[in-house]
Length: 250
Image (tube, rainbow, N blue to C red; front, top):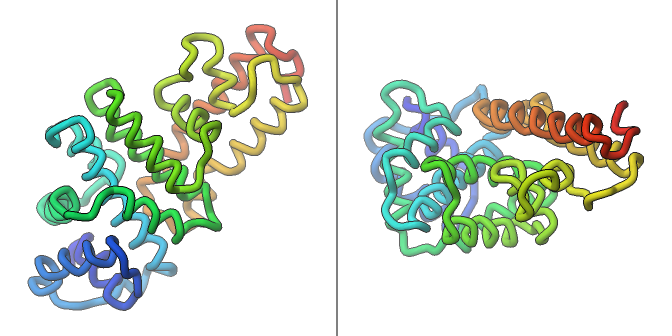
């Protein structure tokens, strides 16, 4: 059975309801009837993988519409976040198009996945990272996409400071230049050394690729986590090199 077929048929034994459940039901009409039913026994926690993958497709599809029509670059960027196996492009595009054309607004998808992962906000942050990657497919984030991502973050339970930190990882802070390193670490400019160290070690621990694997997320998220840790390290090193708090070592 196909990759998306396994995702959809795994979901048949799970109770999602809401807009995610409706999207899965519509996808099943197109995929499951063609491929038959089945459950992926190798998936130790199917609910997490199904919810994350379908939410990424649905929110990615809705976000790709934020600045107008879905572009080839945006679809390609989605495939970079979720490295679709050869021959699976048709099935992913099918679910993507179903979500894009759905009468459900993005708010319903965002609220539902926010509730599903309310106890694990790092998972939601990884999902936002993937959406930023899609938004940046054309090299920039337009105001409509920025507003969309800010609203998704709010429905996920992130406040303005959280969003500014996550955004800084991808496009820098609202204040250009040297403030980016502080924004990436989620601290105010001029924060003392001890605060920098605490923020740095917490972010590295929360974003570590090994944690992504342990959380049962799709393996493609490991690449996003690896890139995120690299940016955290670079921000911390930048503050140390430029005489930001000298104790940024260690």
